[in-house]
Structures are given as structure tokens and as C-alpha cells.
Image (cartoon, rainbow, N blue to C red; front, side, top):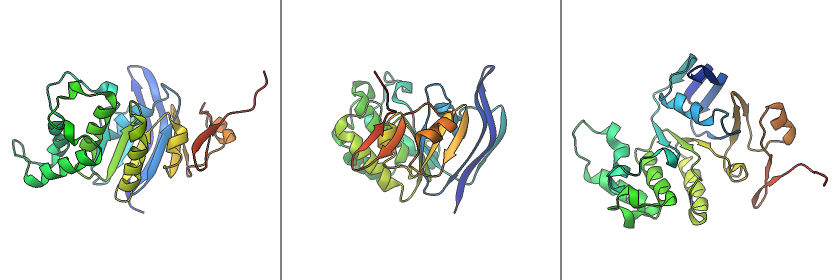
Length: 244
């Protein structure tokens, strides 16, 4: 199996506070990894290390000729910046064109196809500051995948997504997974476990689980304070039995 990237003994910190400790992770072609864990456990920090936004204190990162698409948390996006939906989507191709070069007809067609697929084509000339959170999420999903990357990373993509688009979002990700690896951070563990192939719990350390089925006992062993995850026809969670 083709290895896209590998993390070895990664330690990462903000100021003097250690956030990731001795993290090892391999992502292969066509992986679909769900990352879960408590708030402040280091999930977003892990993505930032992979993207090169945050330099680790120690450890090794090996990326094998891998292009990466990234959908950040929407609350990190400056909605006051004066740019249209269309231009945001096209900006996902900036790394593929020459400096000061123009987008060609194929680029523009691809942008319109993605906007139509995600239901935002009618918003193409709107300023991003005029959009709802769910609409903004769709815009930046289009931006993340327009270059057809080998690895797509999404940081809580189901936040602010309306109920109509949530199912479509994961249908799109399932389709994309045929040609790219996907890493998705989410608190909605019931939903992602119906789609991901493997799970990593990040709570300073990273515990990798080579399946999308995980027991309460395994989560306890991983020191990952998340409800038991399971799924059937409808994704759901089963909580521990308790007495009043």
C-alpha cells in the first residue's frame, strides 16, 4: 500500500504546554481516518503539524510527494475579508498555477461544477461575509477539493452544516475516498463511524484503532473519554447503563 505520510515520535507544544506527546501515525493512499477525542486533546494541533502550520518540538514528518487539501474550522475564517464565493473556490488552485497567472477555462468550469454539486452555484458572486455558517462550509469544501488532492483533511466539517447537507457531505466524502485519502476530525462520532475505515483517539497521545468499530473498554484503555460508538441502519451511540 502506498504511504502518503508518516509521523514518528511527534511532540508538539504551544509555548511551554505540551499538546501532543510521542505521536506515531501512518496515512496510506485511500485511507479514511476519523479522529476523535476530548476538547483540548490535540486533534486540531495534529492537523496543523501535518500541514506545516505548527512546527513540532521534536520528531519526524515524512511526506511522500503528497498534495493536501484542507477544510479548517469555520470559526477560524475571516468573514470580513472582501472576496467572493467564486474567488474563494478558485483560490484552492493557487499552488497549481504560475505566480500572477490566470485561471483557465478548465479551472473555472471545475469551480462551477463543484459549486453546483454542493448547492452553492447561485451564491458564486456573493461576498463570503453574506453567507451562513453552513454555506461557508460548502464554499471551503469546494476550495479544499478543487485541486483533486491526494489527501483531504477536514477539521470538524459537520459544524454549522445544515441537516440537509450533512448526509450529502458524507456521501461526497465517500465518493472522494475512491481517489484520495481522507482524515476527518469530528465530535459527531456516531455519524463518522458509519463512513470512516479507521479511528484515532487523540488525547495528547494518539491511539490508533484499525477499524470503525470500537468498544467502551478499548476507549477506556486509550484514555479517551468518548461514549461507546456503534452503528446499524442509523448511526447511534450507546451510553453506559446508569442508576437513578
